[in-house]
Length: 143
Image 1 (cartoon, rainbow, N blue to C red):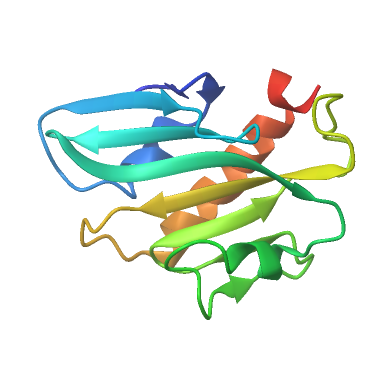
Image 2: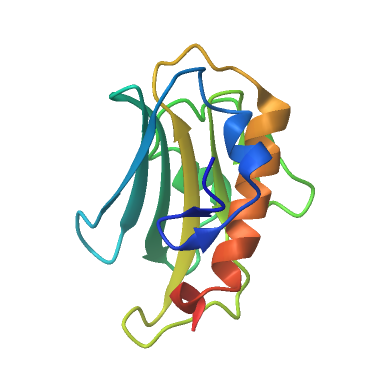
């Protein structure tokens, strides 16, 4: 397990908990559009996990943003309303101080999505989502 996923440091055990078993792990960084950065993980050549950083207009809620992603319906919303997650996916909002000049008046959201791997573990998804969000907040993505 790598200690860094596409440049973001994260505890390997948190990642391992949401991946299926296998022999090889590969990561790829994809930048589709609008400042989104997606880190895709594959196990034995099969898509297993996607971790994304996506900019959304200020004023959105985590619950609203999560509707744009698969497997977050009826997710558990954290008390501070920054995170919503299910056993297969989650969305987290970075702190308001996470601002960059390239994305004025936008908030950075983190998205964790498993890919049809049979993984369904709400606690593991929540732990990875919160840890990855905090790691992004401390990274150049938020400066």
